[in-house]
Image (tube, rainbow, N blue to C red):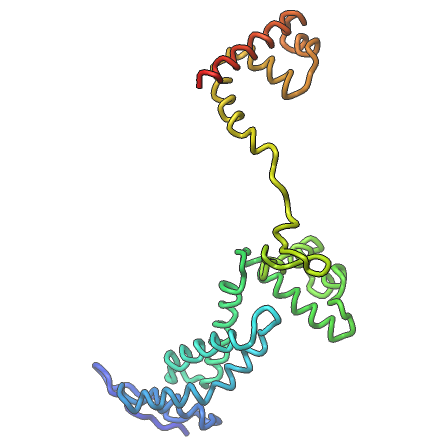
Length: 269
């Protein structure tokens, strides 16, 4: 049978259950803290309660730890969740402390993994699929699939579509993308950055293209169309003439005159 303990407060007196049947001595610390007014005694009980449940926080951190997200980092997050659980627990609701603390700590760790463990931002729906995929891979590895299973096996295990499985597999690179300073190649001769890309030769023409676009607007519409068909769509002068309804000779003169006008205007800029 439960007894009640008075709790000082504003207004009407409130009561808290002093003991829940089946609670451990560690959980009793939380109930005693809740029934204690603010002060040194409450602070001491709070610290004792947090210390008593640190092993629970450690177990939850270990459950979520991976090679990318170390156990110690997650343990710190789990400890933050434990502190929140101790501070926010309300025994008047009639629940055991562990039934509140475990989901609270677990949720804190999951939020950290969702919001802080990704170097590149990934939509939450895709993160959830990636988490399901990792759990299925671990199950398949325990059953003898050293590589975590093929895409088809993962699709069957998770019930996800093949395209979703492929996307979730690609997302792994967003957790810890390779550093450009990381040494790669045979004998690790140089950083990854030196093996990627090269200077784009088109960059030298960017300024000319921007300037040309400005002066092109000053040409008549028919001349712009002739230049577009001839230079951009690579039509012959005869094909351009048929498209605009002019003779081939007229098209040739328009191209020469337009190019000369563009050169003069570019020289003036």
